[in-house]
Length: 230
Image 1 (tube, rainbow, N blue to C red):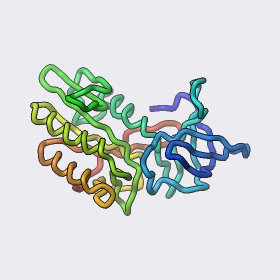
Image 2: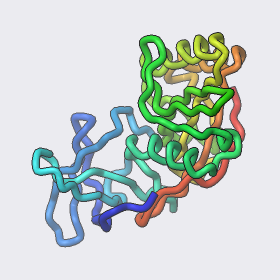
Image 3: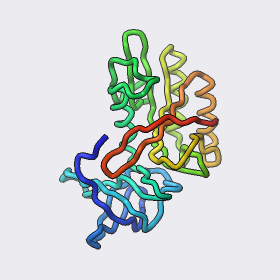
Image 4: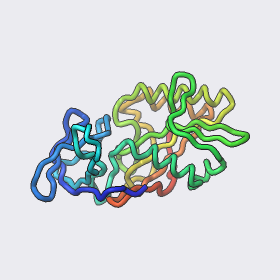
């Protein structure tokens, strides 16, 4: 995925009210950028760090910029939670994910029971529901999810078990928007219920695929699958 417009460089001043970020641009001006990440953003907030913003052309938007990435530990970290869904959808369509390259029809935002899943893929013989999560938190060499308690995330896990029971494929796809990690896992200390729910989902046949993304100011691409530990 390449950015349509050239990103704008700046330095992070602060993030506040979850969805707002003050950024100092290279010309010294200070702008307010929208932060799509509603989590705690543990390990990817560093005041004074280099950041990149994308400009918006929507005249109805109160904020004229969206915060896309931050430079920490000599790596760019993608913090826009809207990106992973698009990455996974595009990669499935382009048949770039070996576990999912057999599907001929791919859709976004499809409901099953009372849950809406990010991607639905099918062919003449099989259907697959896929929930995509953005991962940025790092502890040691591990990428962990979630960085804040998520009842919605737990609900998705329970519904994916029902998808599997109904005879379809069910999958959690974790997009890790940083490269300075080796293994993916659940953040047991932050949300033990989610960690246990992920274990139960896996035991019931829900597949887990963690992928590292290559984050650059020019664009973001899925890079490689990494192992996970539950």
